[in-house]
Length: 165
Image 1: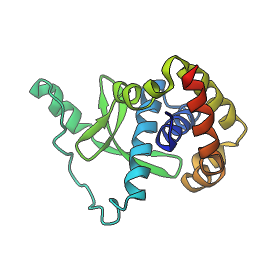
Image 2 (image 1 turned 30 degrees about the vertical axis):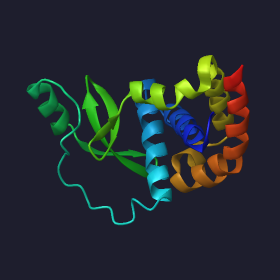
Image 3 (image 1 turned 45 degrees about the horizontal axis):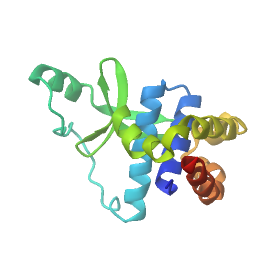
């Protein structure tokens, strides 16, 4: 079943892609924003401390590579929305807490829900977003209110049916 979480992740990834992020970074952004909004809905982000240093990421890597990732930790802006990011092998990935949202995580938590038809949903998301100007896509509020919110349930239902094919 495709739920609102997956709809948010796909639309956010498509948004990031159309605003210029490479596909790997766009998928990381999409999953990051879906997690962020799900946490905000549950009230987990009300008293968020300001992060001033990189977290101890929950990944197993050689020490030098992990230190390089930590040193790349920064605030990234997509339009007027911000997220924490790191660079891995020259690519930008987004983080929440100690978790880095990687392409494999997007595949597991989002794409897998679509069965063999993720590409059809992805293309539909791109077509939907291409109808909006850059100003709406660059605005966190306008994207949420104009693009995501009015069609989240319709897309969840439609994409759940698509996943059954």
